[in-house]
Image 1 (tube, rainbow, N blue to C red):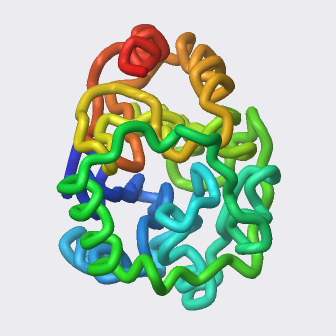
Image 2 (tube, rainbow, N blue to C red):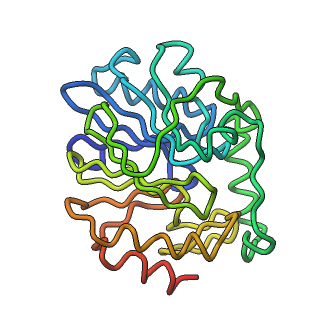
Image 3 (cartoon, one colour):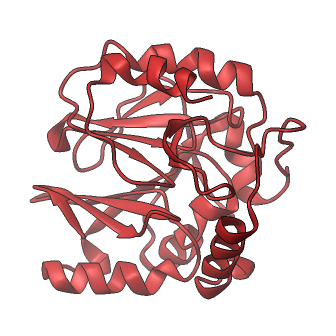
Length: 240
């Protein structure tokens, strides 16, 4: 789905991944669930592009609903998969996440069942962990279409990051925040459930406040948000 020039989403408000499309090629930000592979192929076909136009994948963190088709794409095309060094083991499946007690928040049967059903339909149970990743760090600017810049946002996981792509006026935030709690159905800016360190996750959002050239704030779950970045941290805290 086209969001803006150079910016596309695959998946939906339950689980999403994104494409930055330029004349130089395509950068994939997050890889959803394994079954989003078909969505990726359909989106590329609609753009008149192929898998060979993809230059790399940038992961906002290493949870299974963000790494979905990354290993398949890496093996099939040879593109690099970038992730913060602190989440590399999680993406390889050698370190499981440890959310803080109570961080799931209020769970409601309907939204939770919908999330689980969608995850099954999109083959979340078929997660293939990464066998090779390129570790990145806060401040790195990657040699990929759109020149994505890494902004460390530890909290949801030790290696959670935002990915700033000024060429698309986009800020990809992964699970540093959400606009839809998939377990409760609650919408609006708020902390993501299943966060390792909820206090740290809220604190590090201040690192986003100085950013410019951002029209799109894009979470891994929920609708895009088009408000000013300067209000983002305060709005998420107000929604906690």
